[in-house]
Length: 206
Image (cartoon, rainbow, N blue to C red; front, side, top):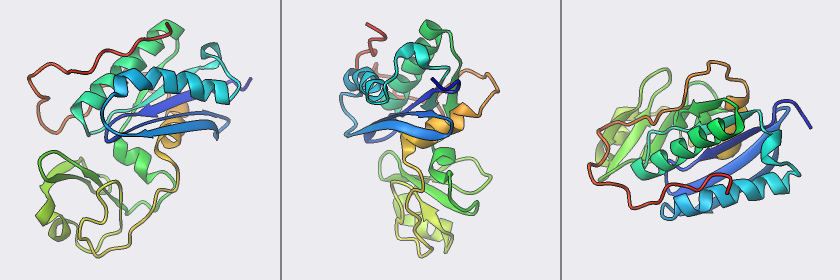
């Protein structure tokens, strides 16, 4: 088995996406569309992806997780799962910002537009931190810059770039080359909701 098997997953939006890569190549990948039930499906999806690739948990040397910004509940679920897996397996876990994953394989001047809360769009300009912009103001904010992401084009007039690399694969590939050792933490643009999540904590390695 390759020495850099990395599992990557992202639940930061209306999806749950999982992939495993070795030697920079995606060996298996699955995606579920929908923002509900992520806690119940994430670990079974990860197990299925490993099985599709002919791997086991013990083959992994790194965990990559999308840290948003995005859906609060999905971020909490994914980051908790990554931290738990890292502890259980004795491997590092790496957080990958959503915009970094979206830009993998695209030109460096591409802006990333993601669906945000309450009619807003999460806008990440090149070399800038993400900001929340009202949907009706996105076109004026971005101008004719090239765009990508789940909310693109949002009325923008620049070139619309499709993803060059599927999201979970991008998370895994970026994580595989990250040696910072910093534990993953969700990226929030505003404080998380005060109400407790209705999603259960994912069951790890049952």
